[in-house]
Length: 250
Length: 313
Image (cartoon, rainbow over all chains, first blue to last red; front, side, top):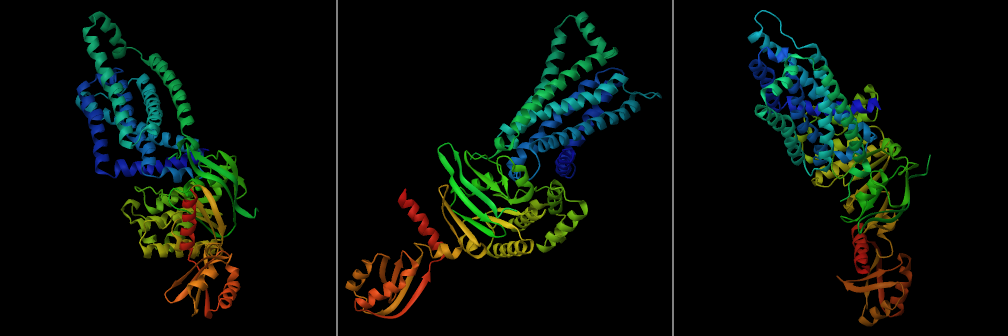
């Protein structure tokens, strides 16, 4: 089982490498991610970037923005490029294909996210360090990687379901792009503008714990919710990703 | 070891009102190239999908290499290789990586994998270009890699769905030779879907003909060529008047008799009845100089079968 999953991951990473690192558009995409999340935003936020839990929100945003494109290419792309049927005619079990593809995307995006946040320490310390070493709060260091992993998994599971129904890679990527935009940008912006209208005292009570308090318990609750959501969505993906469902009723 | 590589009984699969495969009962012996002939949409590809366990039959059953397609499809896929409608190659990866992936899938040890990949790519003349991305290659080259992939883990049975479709004649001939050589050397069974009749005639020990999902006939290319509607006589001589021909046409075994290019052409329902034809002609007063038994080409036998099918509908 593990051997089959790792074989699938090996192929997915080979393709990801070709797509992301060996192509100009892939490299530019990665550079933009690093510049925005690893330089511009940390420098603008200043010491708050590491002293508060504000970076957690971005730790969540990167997986949401990156996973959709990759998972759509992996699942809908396999069908669009006519490689799926041959893959299904091999001895790999359905769940090994499914898990291998999901883990490959999640692993890649998780790694990029962690690298961005380690890299962000460099400009923050150069611009705002003033001789002392600025580092993330312990609960952020503990919950950030877990949250980014779970969110990447959540987006992957959603991506699998969308991709299996989509007519093409483009259609799947558009649907997932809109979802990512809504969850990673539109909703947070709506909350920020909503808070501007709320009484100042209420806002302080809400925002202060994020800036100064311990967000560990809240992150734990969110993590548990994400685990439950992932289990539910993965069950649905597994039910859908079966040879006799996938093939070939034309 | 089962005598048959493939054994199906009343296998059926419908898509809505379309009977893609209808009551298919077929035995394919081990160690031969079996040609599955039929026009586009006749059910050839669906048959392969059923045999690989990618589709479930609605009726009937099938055993491939002794494994049941419903319950043991994983075992079938483990022991079989396939080149389906599309090459199924990853165009972003190199030829070597494509084969490496399927070698790993089939759990070939690393050393054996390396040797086998090198052997196959060398055989197909692609070893020097093994690190190039497949996407930049011609269709013929990709087709060769796909065949190498199907044979990589030394399967007992290989499904090939139109392997020479879209290739130029030289590439197609080369590919046929490659398949024949590799099959002979490795002793595998090949289930070859094709509508390329000369290809089937050259490569296959047995042929099955399918039309509208139903198997019409199975036999060697010779048997199919000289089947009920495929045998004719070309008779040279004197005195083949209309009265003589009318008398000949009244014979039970004679399907048609016409004068053509200076000789008499007689189509028979039974290829063994040539002596009776000659006796009839001589008895009617004609002089027979030479009788040549002509076997129909597979193509004309096949077309005849398709015509009969259209007439029946």
